[in-house]
Length: 398
Image 1 (cartoon, rainbow, N blue to C red):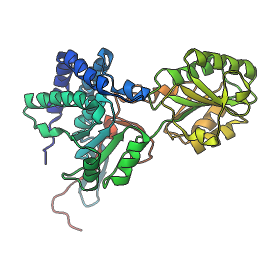
Image 2: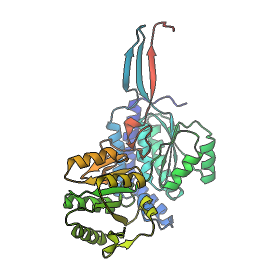
Image 3: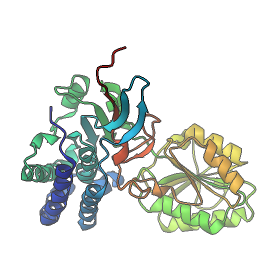
Image 4: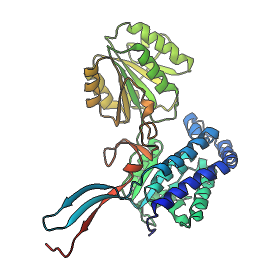
């Protein structure tokens, strides 16, 4: 078992990572270019997540620097109680132990998610996708250099070069202790991990996020939020896939025409229900099953809805439990929507693209959980801990 590293050592390793990422910037981008050249898939969002450029390296450097500046999440007192027999009882945060992160095509996860788990006092096991192997191994090399600089064991960050069969076998019968598994990727990966894992799994689920344009919406805000949510980053799980437009919206036809026109400038494929598919440039969808789909593509479904109550019911039936937004000038309607929609993040007059650890004040995130235990939404530093009871006595017996 690795003894918990002091917070000074953990921070020093993170700051060293920032230096090393800057030093190896060109090498990392060149190494990633080999991964990009070898990628023969046609998944636009996968390619986008795989790519490491200067901006991505800047993000990695900022992530580890920010982590180093944050308070230690381990040993924080959550509760204290003085027993009538004189014992002093504390409940404090504690690291999980070993966290396995299984992910696809995202070399930045090898820095940011691993950094969060490391700062939280955990040993990290990384299992990345084969498409990003060169990039990931280069980053793990930097982790090891940073750890060695402060006489910490390389075992704190370990990369598992497993194929699918070996991964399944490890999930079912781990050859070392694993306390928590975090899958980062598409629904197939998450389902695979859930099916085979024998220890707790944090489900970083699908997006399929909705925007509801209420009858009392500010139409400029509605337009901005939908366009941003759909087109800013199609590979993000916080992107928008579905729009519900209140049938009582004043100037509804004009708004819909303007929205279609704007989406078309981004080459978004637009599918609509019976009411919306009457408009030019909108195709009718074949089946209601499309409401369940997460697109990760330049594709959107727009439908008409009768009321806030119906919008809530539709979102709760079809969404991935990630994010939803209401555009309305009516605060009571917005309150009702936000209280009753069953998603990890709910927005009023703002884009779902903010469901992100950095944007919501956590600094970064290990994952965005669509489960309700033990944490929902972005999982930041302060959430990647469990707890432990500390009881001090002087001979008390029961």
